[in-house]
Image (cartoon, rainbow, N blue to C red; front, side, top):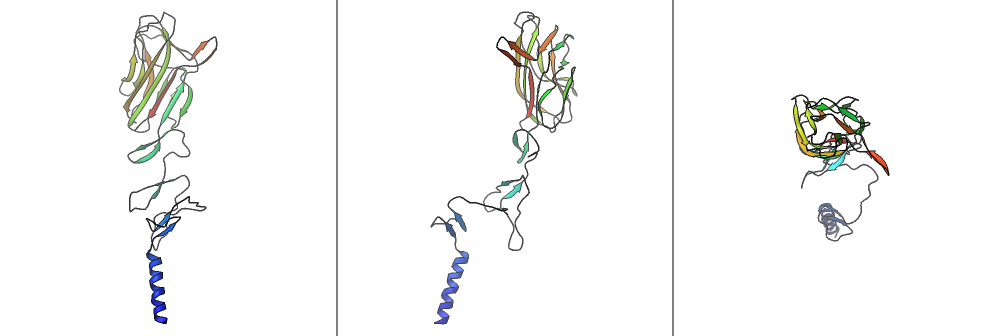
Length: 244
């Protein structure tokens, strides 16, 4: 009788050791199947084996799936939490996209006709999360931190001579040429105002230096604010943001 009891106990323990356990389910699909909320009040260790503990990660990391049959892993998102910006994935890695957004603080007038001139007074930095932009009363320049594709957005309210053809855009200082631009007929009356907008995406190089520029065949003023009887607000703004 004693042998039978021992055999039964051995079989029962063996089944418990190798069976699937379900919480709030009678048909567990994995060794541990929880049908409901899970509360973890301490660290969460992933990976490891019978002789080594799993990895609990470090503060700020996120849990990444490595596919079926593989333990997940803790991954660091570049730039988080110290950086401000949009998180993108590049080559399978998370990072905070470089972003520059700048507004004008006062009007800027260009008197050099036919020459691509750097725009001054672009010095209200809304965001420059990698500190690669410089703006003064007479000029501006910036660099990108990595080779990639960047979204360009420029909105500028211009005042110049009627029937001229102003250009706004991004100038590659290293190559000495436009890399993004828009031009249009200025149809407003001389001394009036007309808004020019550029939205595009272009490849940019970390080795090069760029600038926001404007050109026209006659004197031109870029206005910082749009004003009316009901109020005023900033109108000229430029931005660069990495997409990939």
